[in-house]
Length: 181
Length: 94
Image 1 (cartoon, each protein chain N blue to C red):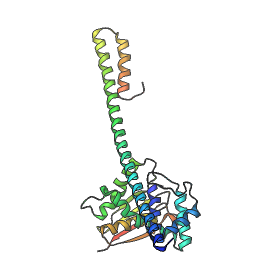
Image 2 (image 1 turned 90 degrees about the horizontal axis):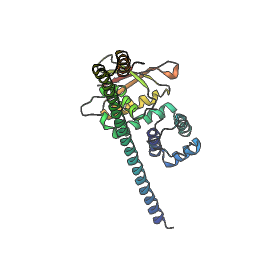
Image 3 (image 1 turned 120 degrees about the horizontal axis):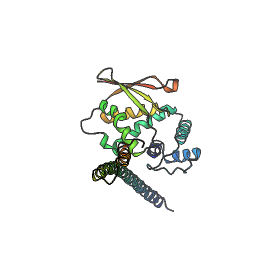
Image 4 (image 1 turned 30 degrees about the vertical axis):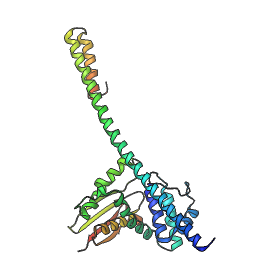
């Protein structure tokens, strides 16, 4: 998992729960690098899972809920770092479709070792976008959080249904995004 | 230590920490920009290398034709030379 995920998780935990909570997590997780994360590095997925599990135990919040909250927090960080993917005039829906078509292609150029989810889309109506998410990491909660974060950025009210999920044995997740007007 | 000194010291640490964090973020952006530049340069070099390789194969082809017309090579040798040059040009196994 790319370093920016860890540095942002660190920021979020510090901001929402305080510096001491992050220190407690480090003590529990015992990361190989002693918690010295930089955006330039790549770190074990298992470490991220451990942070989420420990934080979940500590704060009595469901792991999926924490991951989703992280996604919402992560979006503005990415938007701020890569404004090139948010050109003037682009709509929320167009942007969401670019995630697989453009953003993940560019990520692969920079980080050839990146493991990216495969996303395909269905557009049943102008106000709906269905995202079919497939990833060995099964981080659909993160996809939901990032989508909500994107909607916040665009100031577009959305609702997300998740009728098919990899965590319930399916080979993909179906995220039905409705733009509420 | 007086309470006000203690608060002042904490504030100083907080300031220093924010600065260190900013420094890390700047260094990370720098690293990413350089990585991107490197990727673009690498892609351009790869393209140029392929172009040069093709140019060199074409030259070999012309040379074989020139040698044939000059009569310095017999047809058998020129054919061999020619087939090799075409294979190289089209990236076929010789």
